[in-house]
Image 1: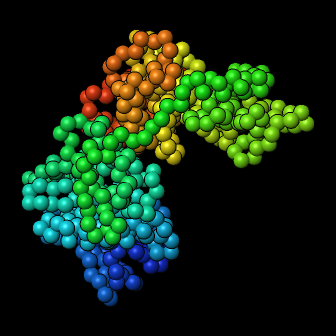
Image 2: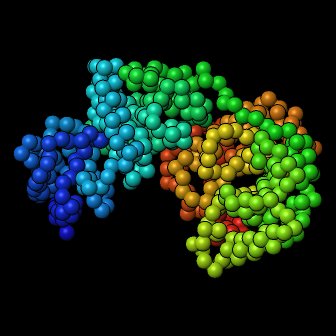
Image 3: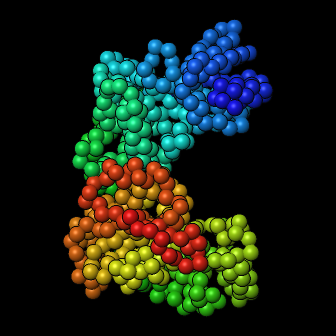
Length: 495
């Protein structure tokens, strides 16, 4: 089946369900009720013509970008336009996700803002459709703004997006910049000057902080949208300052562990090889974990056990329930479970890997000192980052930041760099020694090493794009682990 036949077959399938919505660069093409279409091949080119009583549209098809049940995304060439556009067909009976509708409204407002604030520039493309092939999220509006022979890659986040989405914009923006430059290289003339990011008012601090990690010459500009969405104001990252982080004095951690020790030791005897205890940052509580999965919490002299919100205080009357829970955990949360798809096996994979690294950091690198390795130091409030932070030191006294991940994540690199920047700031203030960490170690003044550790096949391809634009002062070692790391950590490559 050639491209034209494939396209016709898929459009027939999409139209079978009834009416279809068509979006070009994220904007709905109205007036296509009762749409009909024709696909024809002319030499090496494929043309798509679709029409209704109200509209008549013709495009040259560059490629089929994505297809799935009830949805088709094409990269098309508009007649009289140098740059390709994105054409999306969606079966109308498929409810548009609320987030998608919100982004489409934001796209229209953002297009108007660009037209009013930059009247002499041309908006070549603007869309909120995802580009899964290049790992570019549909959570943002992205496009290209041309100024003569120069163009800017643009990416904007709606004020309705949550904090995690807004804070991740730099990762996706750098991917979009790379994609835009690649397109320019394959066409005649022109230059991509850099990337402009547009964030909601008052929500650019995390992104501005991460700018410190970019290599000199990486041309990224930051803007905030005012509350009316009618103006965008430049933000100087140097005016933001360092984000708030804190260190819990080590003596407080040790005191909390000492207070809970008798109770924790009693529980640990039930499965000594699998149970550990850590003090969550900023608390006077102890999290008791079975291979990284919290099953009990000690606080105010009492132990509460159970999974998730199903907690009960431990008493003599319910000791057997605790033992039964540990038997269940031992059955399913082990390297060779009867069912690898069981929730207890798959839950909190990063935490499981964390416990293994805490016990044997030299498995990652023989230089790491097993006497001094701490979870989430320094600590900060950033929601569920989806990544595990460890801080240690080499045997020579150089700080080492360790980021752990067991699944693909576009944001791994910049989340790790964010943590590295915070550690470096506290290092320059001599905070670690002041708060009782790394006692007896002669610490080096060199910037910390940064380890990115994940199963070898779980590194997201986007990491290579982002690593290229980071400052050379951040010394990074990418550590690829064996896929069956639960049975024991082995390093299969280092980069």
